Image 1 (spheres, rainbow, N blue to C red):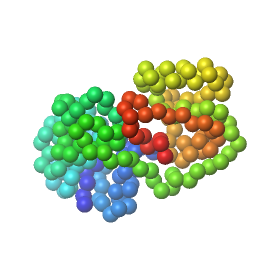
Image 2: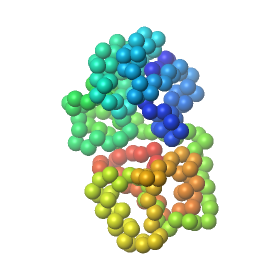
Image 3: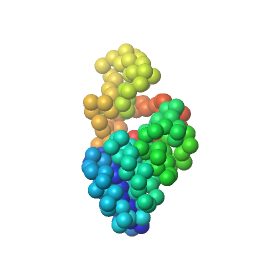
Image 4: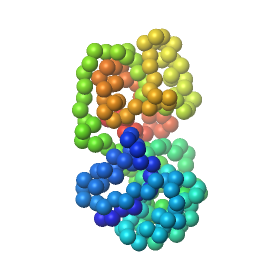
Length: 194
């Protein structure tokens, strides 16, 4: 299968791991950076069987509507209270799947590369650690509670200090208690769960 994959690609981007795994499974994957030229990508689609992408900026709306091969959108974040009726480029794909069970989508969970499955045990440096971004009222309240409850023994990674992959495994090996949450939707799934 020949896949045109439009995403952010970097060391710790989920899309990089997905693209690498698709290649390991025998697919030919052409990576197009999401802030690239949508019209150049549209010209390239004649060489591919499908287009795969996640979140897209509005500049890509015409691309999705005018693509002549099947388009697949795989969303890793929860879009609370949203449905496919929204006018966002990614929801105009032929097929929309999500990791968190967005309304009107199929669920496909994220995975991690095989070499990230190793667990480590070290001397404990962190008593209580919250892993995740503090982008909601509930998470901010949880952060404040943990900060007050475990004063001087609580740490948070995910906003200023992003950590994933093997680096996350090393930090967890130094942690007594790791806290995460499923807000804003029960069933939310993050690749940090692993």
